[in-house]
Image 1: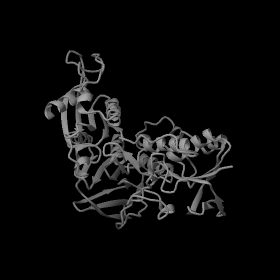
Image 2: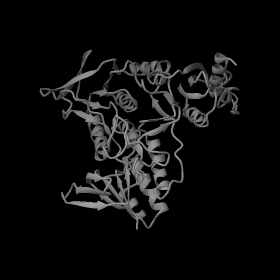
Image 3: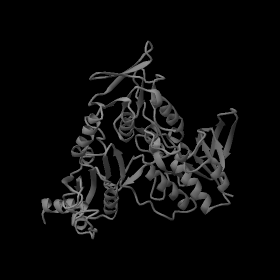
Image 4: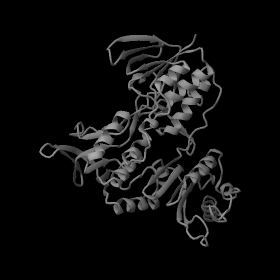
Length: 449
């Protein structure tokens, strides 16, 4: 019998375990998870803060019992303390009893996920500084938000941006701090982030952008914490640290090929540099189709698809990984934002020669009683004319447009091809020329024949 050890059970681990057992119900699959829960949808934390979650128990799409019913041996609240890849063994400790043991394995799946970035600055270990990652963090944030009058959110990426919006929506005085000069600077270009920042200010959020946090200071006399930046000081009842994630791969460091940040490099079958070891999710690299290179993009969508591929390829290489465009979306106040592939800023950071085309037009005809403008930004390669990415922003739902562009990038569409796709026209939904096709047509006109 083949013995498989899976370390970590959030998105990638859950789908890896399920897919392996579906293909090989007779295999001996051991799942190790240091938390008491599996498959937590952390993307719902901010929504729970804002009272948009019907039942927090529904923020899990699986459970230890479900995986056990499928045939897995679940080691919950268990810490894997050492992994010997060459010897094919791992050591583990039960966090409740302290008992230790060793498991020999035939195949290893590393789905250890990521850990929050915690900068080495004075005061960061304060009890008034909160992380935002797992179920325990979610419970604590929800409890604190119930009575809090003020909060400082450190980090204006997706997590921080959503938390700041929801805190402000329930009447908590909110400050959003980031060292970048824009919110969502890694996700959207300035024509879109300008609109987001206007919404924050309109809802009373203090934006401290372009300011690096240098320390945190507890104020025991009134039970607050002060976030000290290189540009000012911001005091609140608590702070949430949401400045990013790093791969949680120390267990196998030096035993598998990795990027400099610790992300495990895999091939198109999710195999690592050691063929009987697989990796997926936030612990692993992705193939980023807009650049054609390995990258680190921790998204649940990537983790789910990679986890499923582990099961498809665990016996023999069978189904290739198609890569990712890092397609994503977020709702902030009345704004729907969606993106796929490279932004102009992302291309510039990578030193790539990429052009961008911006178009602002109403999403449906003027004769309709209501309509709304959509900001579309398309990025493309001026040499090959290949579509490299797009961003959309409007008060109407534009999430589907990002999915359209994701398919176009993966299928290696040029701007000419995208401009000539057969998009529907119906006045309830769009203009005679759908805004995705319209921005592509504008790019074609700018580039010329």
